Image (cartoon, rainbow, N blue to C red; front, side, top):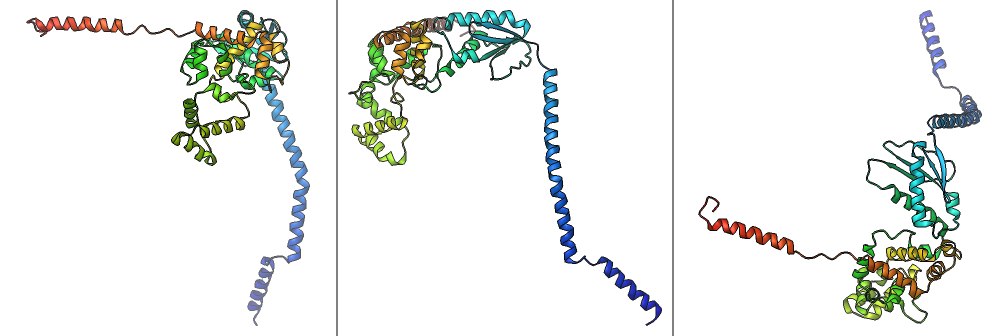
Length: 373
């Protein structure tokens, strides 16, 4: 072998030695070292992430405090209001008007109101009002919008009061605590309700109004029979949705006309709902109006009496709050509804007269030999 061949062979062997992978045990040692290094860095990474979160929180808090709106705090009765200084007088005037007109007569103590803050702004441009702790009831309105501040204030107070009744039967029955807004709608609901109880109520039977709201149906009576006639029960069963397991009963009720099947279906629905008033013909708006009237009639301490027994039935709570009998309270509700009966239309007499006027005018022109002919 020549010297050149020998050099080429040595070079090739050296290159192969340099490029060949390390032995298996060397690879395992390197990988284990790398994983160990990663594991040793993980606590440092977690600590760095915690520090970064704290830094971001501190920066956000600094920005928040730098942009805090200067506020003023005032009290109206049990209400605590946070507002901007230029709105202080308006806040005091509007909150006092709503409180004294709608709530002061019957609200004695209220855990929710004592723990609830309200914010108020009424300006062309709103600024952030920050309140620590429990989320406030916000009354923050742009002036150019048509919303009336008193309406929003009233609803905010009602929302706070409703927290006093959380978990009670009276709140589940009425669905809300609210003033009877648009009372003419109550008359329409009563007049259009397909129910024998509603018709008797509208005719002046106050006891039927009470029963129609699902109150005290009587231990020995069938509430469905008190509320609806046989045909009305059949129609009600046809309007409701039923599971497939009850489809044959529904068909027997609506197609064959078997009243017993209708009653079995509706009784099953009452049992499933767990609330015997859920199918009562007079719905939550009518009930909320009765609750409001009970509080107004009860006067001082009515709110305390209403929430005094969380286990009281809706009827017991209403009678306790109002201090009236069922007949007296339902009569007061019926008087309120009838007093707000929508105005009846006078007919189309004026339109008919206008039509006759134009008919006569064009008729006269048509009989003349003019270009209008």
